[in-house]
Image (tube, rainbow, N blue to C red):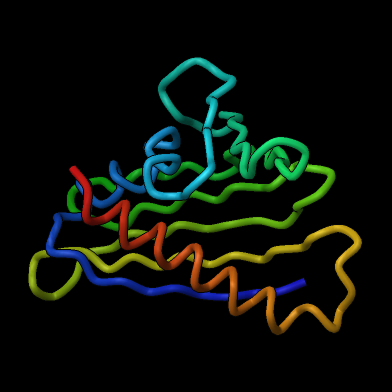
Length: 146
């Protein structure tokens, strides 16, 4: 199991950063070899379920997630979303927090606890490095795109 935190500053206002980060199918645009399918009708709320399918051919796996906390930003205040990973291969949770930054933009915090079945504890350090790199690139891409 690994736990990590990513932090980014964005010139976008809080509500725009929130929209960019919680448009689930959009994540497939910035994560190679990934497709995201939302299984519940919009809008996103507690109970929304989506599946990220990553990889190719027999090396692909599904990462089903459920939104368990959904508090969009209001009146330029912070927004928080918590996802629980419900897969058989990848489990854990992720929290996305978007709050106002001093310059009028937004501060994004992405916290994640990640477990990969059958991976020994000795692999935690490389998994943490790889997850921070991969999710950091995704976060940067999501905040950069319109």
